Length: 232
Image (spheres, rainbow, N blue to C red):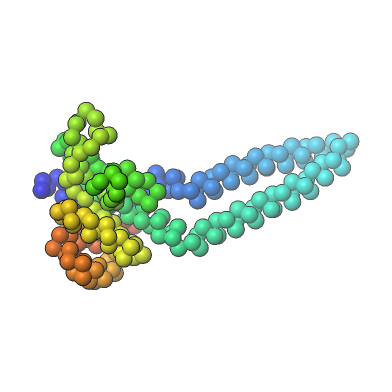
């Protein structure tokens, strides 16, 4: 395989601003911030009304009502955010998405383009490129592929490199996906957390697909604030 599309470089940035601002929690906070600013503007207007002695009582009544409404809104918002962050599946999906983006960033997009290749990532919320039968599609997290028609890149193509990226909680649940890819004769990269390498090896061996997988591991480097990817 051409070295310009090598599976791994030593590290890539661990934070993706696009994914950050696309996150539903961040969007919710930003939306809430806009609402709070709007409420603040209304409060300022009400206080201005209160300065007029003829409308003083009306202003106080409006302030009291708005205060009650704002308190209820903020309480509801905090409870919603707390529930989201306490949801382990949500956190796992968030981490999964960050690792996928970091892995994709290890490839030189310009070099891929020179070779007529495209790179696609599939996440838990966005499925863009599948392998296999359309009636039973399989979505590896990363697919580097060559379009059948360079002038219509959105169409079909041939996979050049495939990577399945797992988290601690997805290993057992995605074994069937690994088996399917192996049955197609695809030697794919399996990228797992560093602490789960031994568990992954056991799963591969017990399913007789250990020879069809290029095992790789990742860890978050707290010094560089980047995800590091290494071959096992």
